[in-house]
Image (cartoon, rainbow, N blue to C red; front, top):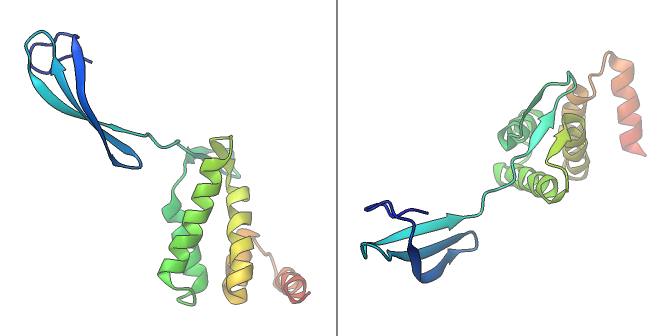
Length: 147
């Protein structure tokens, strides 16, 4: 790190404090020109990526999970509950050792949670996610749900 005033690299830390769980505030002083300044250190979150069915890799977006569940639920699941599902999934993915996951894995995670919360939302989500081609496919999923 260089001094913002004289651009020399002789910097000392005078004081350190935790702002919160993810940020540290440090007061620093340049040993050359005596200029004092503050820096903040933040933990950089892991960048997750998703491999789609087509093979395309794109950044993870929790908003897509929220939007998909909201459409499938049609108002049956409250917004805070949908946010909670997205949070759970994002935390699980972040905790895994791999920063890349598949859209299939994310879809299965959503389906697993919807199945426990609301069967109608589950069926609506599954019909798009599993790409039901006819009424028979839908009926088979409904039979599985009843078991």
